[in-house]
Length: 205
Image (tube, rainbow, N blue to C red; front, side):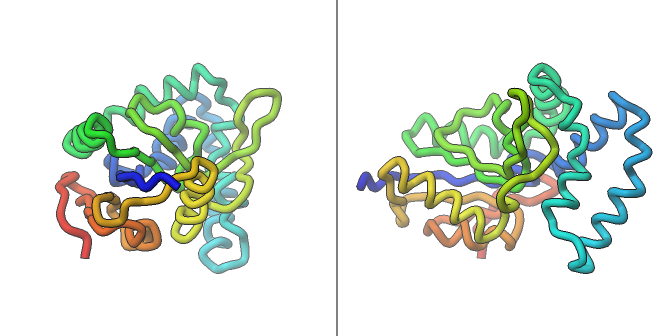
């Protein structure tokens, strides 16, 4: 087992300002205005989820409907035009510095892998919520568990076991904007909070 220094990064409101799920929804509206007809069913499903009447996968699949129309080129365009302009420059610079310093950079997010994998950021491992692939194209149908809270740790451990790696607790870092990431944050000694408005970094207590 190879004990290694890691740098774990959440994505939304950590590497970027805002929610990438919102950005893909707006991107879908601009590309296909009739997508506006989906707003009402989306609202119904999310109300159902909040009331614990509807599973998160179903609600999220409805929200991510633009993915079913997007080919590989559109996914790249979405990431370049809608995600990259929202980078927190200081956090991205920190990630790149750690990558160059030999940390194993791991991006772990509830956002979907369909567009996270289009990132221009350097990384060694990436885990996101998975969606079904049909005919070589991503769909909006969420499969498996939403990559959030304890599921992040499960996904990370799966990758580490497969690679024969263990986390150097004392010398590793984790970055997030939200207390919901405590399961991931507790994997390391050095926990960093990202301010949602400015991207400023501070100790996560």
